Image 1 (tube, helix red, strand yellow):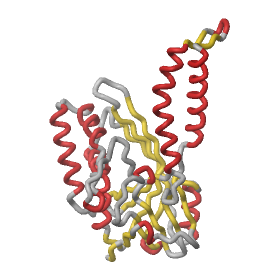
Image 2: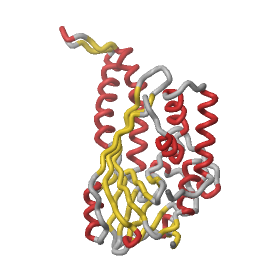
Image 3: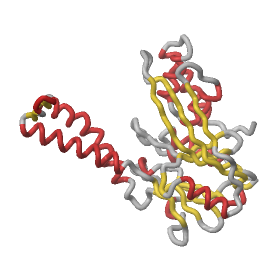
Image 4: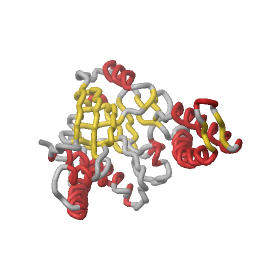
Length: 288
């Protein structure tokens, strides 16, 4: 098996290719901006009355501006990042795909090491769309967090993914290229390597997933039937679910899931979760 080609960002071609750029929440940002602007106007007026429909006092308007404004500023920052030249997810030429595993949201991670994976079409045995719905505990006292994602899954063949697995693990650990970087709370990791060399790409890109599947079909890649899955980790979480969360490096979700599914203390859950994540960061992918 040949190792996959890992490239620096500047080594990925930017001409004679088809580019799939990361999408951002422009519509949400605009709508939220309208609401924030309206509340600022209400606050400056000292409140507004709607006749028999009630009133919006100034102090409530300013309270909305404060909290909603924080989220709006985060969305603005996200949208500005999506305008950067490096904010692409996949590039395709006549021979294969260039897949950028470092999210445009982590643009501040300025390192000189590889962050792009090149996969020839000949090394893709199968591709499919996978819609996933995860339901995880929000906190110990109740409440759920629903996450719905669409993934492009590529089944790789005749490839050595050992180095890629190490790079992805370092990325999630906030240690890309051996340089410790503060991850913060909002690190984003769109590419994951699952067991049996299954490459899973979170598809938040334009054009949509139908376009990339059509391109792969034209290049001779077999397209499998779409897959839908739902995991409710609030009441039952299997070992496979915990292992996947460990590969993602999602410490907080692992702790909440462990405590919701068993009589375990916070300290025990944290220790177990950290041990599982560390194990995934220090071992190559297993071929079952």
